[in-house]
Image (cartoon, rainbow, N blue to C red; front, side, top):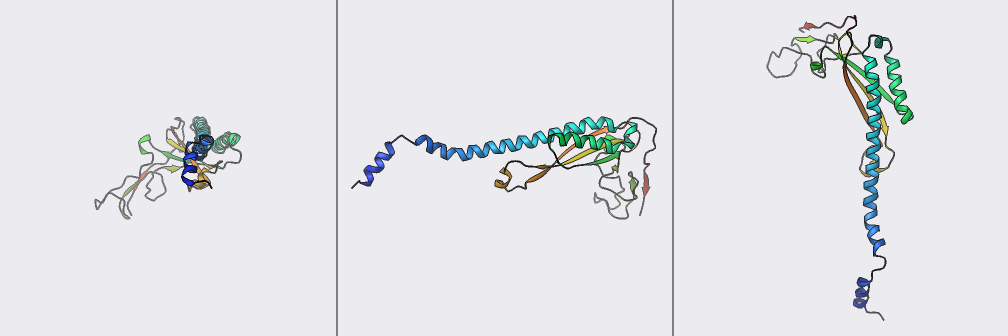
Length: 198
């Protein structure tokens, strides 16, 4: 009969098989890190493809002819993205502003009660011509001559590795690419702002 203390001593001194045991302990963590790295770099690559396509289309969208060819410009971006990511849905938005400083800012208003926010009934400058106060003063579309245009593309990105499941994330995410440019000084009327008091 083998005594347990002597068996444990022999097992402790025995060196064969330790490499496989160490590999078994480290491999899952290492493989998970590699998969996470691959998943992240694939997502960053997708974002760069989208940003590159948007940058290429941005110059064309500021020309006078762009007002009639917005769908062609969007189709060019979509085609460029779908060459690398077949079937990836891509949607687009355009907002125009009077200047670069106005991008993403609310319409100016008279703060009658000094609470630093717009309240119904306060006078405001309707810069986008929709007769409502907006937290973003941009007007939908490409705008007119010398307007600043915020062009945004949104792509639905499907993750290819199951790392998302282990991290409790959804199987898809949305990637955004934006650029801000000024339209050429062609001769088209733009929306003129007016002060509205309700």
